[in-house]
Length: 499
Image (cartoon, rainbow, N blue to C red; front, side, top):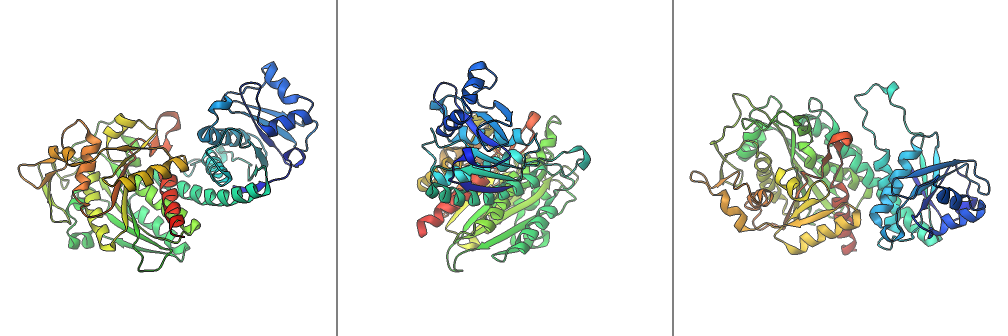
């Protein structure tokens, strides 16, 4: 989808559809009032007669309205004026795109205005508008008969702004938003693919295609023999039960001088998780194809960076493998040696994510990183704690934690800080190894973070547990692409502070 901006009067703008926001009450956005006057009170009558609703998610389409240049008017409910915030703005954009997708409209002008969205400047109105529109238009139909999947005709969305300066800022935001949206799509497509398609080798191939398209990127893929030589006993113990060979994907983006310390993003990529010998219950196991959501998000962030072109060095490290039961699989009670030299007693083979991450985090040290951030669908305990709304942020570094939370808020990609300290690590003691891979049931997500912290001593590090935010279940089952938005904003903000 193409995104444009304009500062001209939307009442006189020729377009297939003009999208207006309507509030629940007498107060209406400025542009909506102008259109109401131009159409002889049409909007007011529709609202007062009950033909159009103003609650969030409600829409009403008017064909050939008199008094405006647009061929159609689409009224989108925005709720109470006092509750119209950044999240409501994104929802209104998404609602409009979804509704237009059921028409033959090819281009539309969106005039929701800045009424009530004081938290968003013109740049973020453009950026979040583009991201919300792309998210609403997203479809994953690679494995459906094409003839049964009618596609939306919407090709161009123009955001109406109050001034030319706002339009210029919104255009810059929309361009960045389109880049982030491309990264989100990359991540969602990877995660939505079935596990017989998206296995470790497939992820490596997709990373190679990305690197081949962009001169600022380079790729190295490590196989089993190289991992064995490096001493990655924890990662290899997880992969042992599968016929699919593991891969360590190392994708580099160079946007700054070679001597500048990089940001390293580490993404857990269990392309299918049966739980191994500690087998998961069958209901819902199909969703364990999403257990590579962290790796998908990290690669998606790199896809966004390829378009954003920040003046930073960023390296993605993605350990990818399957966790399967077989005669070769790790058993509860096995002890493995990690790349760091520490030994781990495997008490539960379904706590495998931390095993592949600990070796990847150790590997990340070789790049002498400025900061390391890992993203992983790590614990069900995180879903119990925060549900599906928030990504959990764990970091012993207050400055880094606040930096990530600020990025999450600006990006509209909600996150919440959770505790990680030595107290949580107490339950990881083992009688037979340096550390066990699981501890007490209570505080499970913080205990998992404490496990990872053992391998990040001396690093500026944060862990993002996305077990609740990486995918949706039920009727909307599918990958979300989170936290590509948060990570992209984090990196853009880092660049801004240096210029």
